[in-house]
Length: 320
Ligand code: APR
Image (cartoon, rainbow, N blue to C red; front, side, top):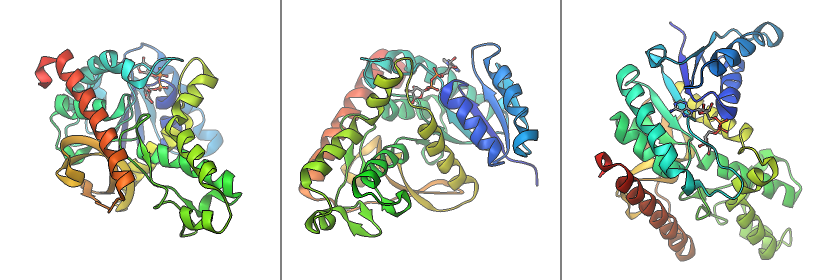
């Protein structure tokens, strides 16, 4: 069987980390694409030279030509401009929408059978626009946000309870932004829901509320510290877990920005929900019962995504 091919559109901080992880895990041969000349080629050469040291057998190449992504099985898109301090994800909208147009057209022309994972922000709008521009089926285009957001939530919960990260299962719904909805009731330590742990005196509602807030602004916290860019290690690791779920037909249920067709009362938008990833891409959206508070928080998040889409349509009339 031929080796799988992983194409990474954007060879910046996340793109380079994705390439390293994909090669280390031998997910397939890796093609790094970027409009900046020399960057994807230089990173590919550097990463190729990790192979003999780390003992991985994957070909890593860099390119500025979309023709080189032909036949890709998985494409992960990070092309665009990351957030600078003080800039919201939404400020990025105009710039990154144009980038999605060129990326979508490149994918449509050269790799229309790929499973596409979008990371570029503002995520819920960019994944929708990328799907529109590429014309791929909705089940083959997905946004990475929930795996990262729930990883952030899980990290803070593990610190709070002073337990292994392996025992924490954290659940986040909604858009990737300040309106995301970390769902405390569905988040557990070894299967014990957080509200029960509060009753057991292991934490307090105030502490958990603070953790929820820290999760919501988790990306901004890192931007504020780095000053010259945004998070890249955890975003890359998160997208790789989604790629592995697809390539291995793992039927994992992961929080993703998936296209909804009536689930959660939403039609035609990409919103963060639990979804099954297998060989057919997004195979199922899992609809869970939510209490009133989570429902109204989710609605705020959905409304924020809708607003972003309207802004996209106003910028690019081909999307209207
Ligand atoms: N086509 C291809 N690549 C592009 C294009 C384009 N039209 N426009 C910009 N790029 C490339 C840049 O040259 C750069 O190498 O995208 C890369 C982005 O890399 P970084 O600036 O390092 O950004 P990164 O941290 O990787 O984040 C990328 O993911 O999380 C989101 O908000 C983040 O939208 C941002 C994206």
